[in-house]
Image 1: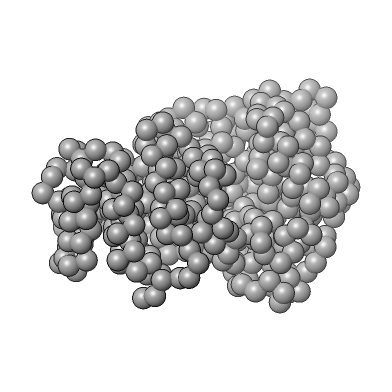
Image 2 (image 1 turned 30 degrees about the horizontal axis):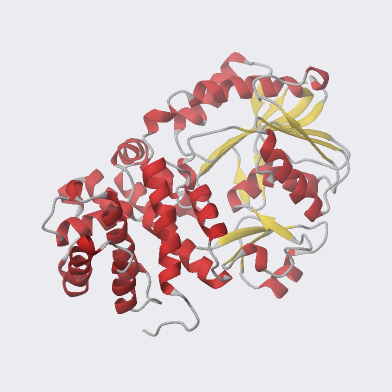
Length: 438
């Protein structure tokens, strides 16, 4: 392996270290901690990319890294101070997962960030890894199904217990392998401005399997061809299919009740050919400004944003909408691959969500006119937030029924579907299409 030229490795690691410490000591959200650290740094774009990879990689692989540290250290991992533990994780992550960084740089520059009293210990553990890594075996299934998956894929045991109870061990293993194996970003072509074939010819990447508009591409999104001109935006394929399932048409009145960060609203607006009325509501006013700025970049003019709690509908719009998208706040366990903190979240923390989701669903339904369409969706794969909410709604609202739908190449004759990451390489996602009877 050869070290890249013109890269200040120490500063890259310093930035990642400071951001990781903020997450550990202050409980700061990872994206905020990293953004703050990068803004304070003087790193080049390429160096920021490496710092980002190192930062998120350490968070994503935390359980696996700690397993290696425990195997290599004479100290109990609970007795290692936080800063030292973070540096050990950073060093082993580079040695194990970053082939582009030479071993000597990974060790020496990581050790240099430590105070003198802990440098010897960190150096010893990292060098032990280079000698003994091949001898360390990750736990097999017969050592405990939950334990094995937890260490191998760095996912908390509580959520694994839940997922295994729903999907079984083998399916969970496949899902986690799919999440670990994809580092690409999915883009949605803005067909108001360009066709997908033309865009992929200029942009590169691979087209998506189900969505006729998606492109999978690596690289910093804001630096890609066509970003500034609004030729595309970031949207996972499952989310694209969700917006397509709504079936919005030109000239209609459509409401997106929980719209931020806005990608589904953009897809709906494009399907409407930028003609009609599209209301994009969200509880958080500060996030709506991002929807507005992105819509402007994309050339979308029909979106009207409004700060609104989904449980408290706009009285003036009751019975007025042709279509409603109800993409509710959820536990997010379908997007663990993109949000590494979710790997360690206890599902019990989301126990109140199904009730909140149901309240948003039943109030969102009030916007529909007779014969109107509602899509209920989440980015989780837990039945209590998905199928069970829909079943309860249909039981209590006999004037609604599930509606079969086709979105791209996805056919859903039952009217609702849970997309799992190992099926098509999408996020874990739930979509249900309902129709209000005339």
